[in-house]
Length: 344
Ligand code: HSE
Image (cartoon, rainbow, N blue to C red; front, side, top):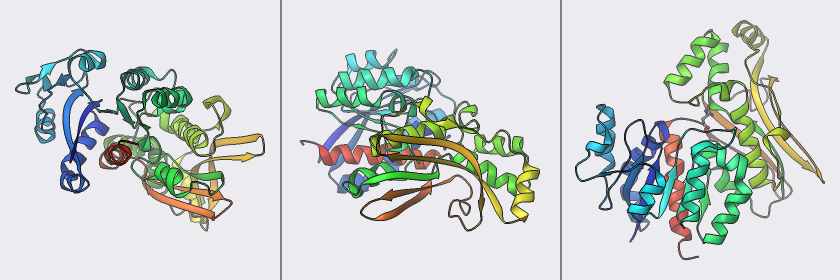
């Protein structure tokens, strides 16, 4: 059995989802020889603490559920930030789950850089660092001999990066097309069934699908970041956000969606990228699809991605694209992958 000392940065929807999954998956992880000791949680909203002996995730969840500060956790030490935490305790893996900042990477980028530089493995659901600085961070991880994993940045816990990295290795992936934003897909499905734009957005926020700032979802920035991440990690495309032609769903109204649905068409926010020799094309835009298109059948916060490959033709993966448990699972799956690669 190997014990992994894990620190969670960001104890909102995703960080709490990860804590819940660590509890739910404890015996399955143990069966894989993977024991997890949660040695710290950082979040200014609920309190930042470390405890080298381990914090019980159940107790942390119950404390935040009751509105208590985590600094009241018996035996835990309050810390100012990640570098303070890394100075005080040993950490093997950082779960980085702070809100995405696609302008300059924000605190998430600082966290990922600092952890990798300190020789700590990183599993992140934060799209900012991966969409903006993946090449630099991957190089830093290589230099320090640690892993940088980002399954939850695309399609939440649906294992799309794992599929690409393992199953599609050598298959010659040259393009992809899909629905990559759960909030927009949920909203479009709700609007087709009669809800207004504002009601659908409020419900997506209530269910934990939307970003902290939902403009990132409805204006297409979130899907564009996922296109960049997939294009760079899977197609080796070296794209930036500016390379993605982007249009969101803010111009669509419920009446138009309902009229088109009655005619057999569905609007979906379609994300795609392809390589043609040295040329690259990447786009996110709402598209009116015939009901025969598999993307049209996708409802709610679901995501669907179709890879086009030389060896296998089309390969599809579908699953949740957002949500607390689904995104929390991504961090647990990345931890298991790090565990599997330990010693390599
Ligand atoms: N806000 C994102 C979505 C969450 O709705 O898809 C997952 O990245």
